[in-house]
Every structure is written in structure tokens, then in C-alpha cells.
Amino acid sequence: MMEYTYRKEEDDYLFLHMRNFWSYPNEDPKLKLFHANKIEEDHQTPSGYTRRIIIDKDENLKGTLEYRDVPLEDNWVPLPELGDWEELSKYDR
Image (cartoon, rainbow, N blue to C red; front, side):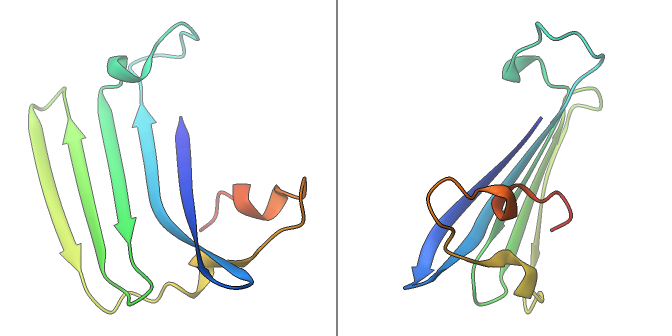
């Protein structure tokens, strides 16, 4: 499962601030978020700061990585017209 969180940073643009990824031990559609065996969170700011949190329940690990000056041009998207959400759901960011 994947989740993107955008915020309006400028009058006509949104910035992708957070990405969450949940991995599961199998493809069972009844699994909930708390069943995830691996969680990855990416938190980003327009200045290029990125913090990545990785939780791996199978390995009993939690780690945080921080980066500066990350090129994040792809995180900016024009503010879409109502109902035109396709640009916000691209998986290749």
C-alpha cells in the first residue's frame, strides 16, 4: 500500500511532503495497516531536506536516515483542477 501527502506551498503548486509505503507478508486483502511487516516513510521539504524512516518488523529494526540538498523538482506539481487527480497519483516520483 502507498500513500502520498501533498501541501499547497505556492499559489498554483503543491509539494509532495510525505510518502508512506507498507509491505505485507502476503497478498491477503484482509490485512490492515498494522499487519505490515515493513514500513517506509519519506518526509521531504522544498529546501531539499529528506528524512527516511524504515521499520522492519521481521528484522526487529528501526532506522532513520537524513539527507540534505536532495533534488526534489519532481515533487512539485501544478495545482490540479477539481477532479483531475491523475498527476497526484504518479508512482515514479
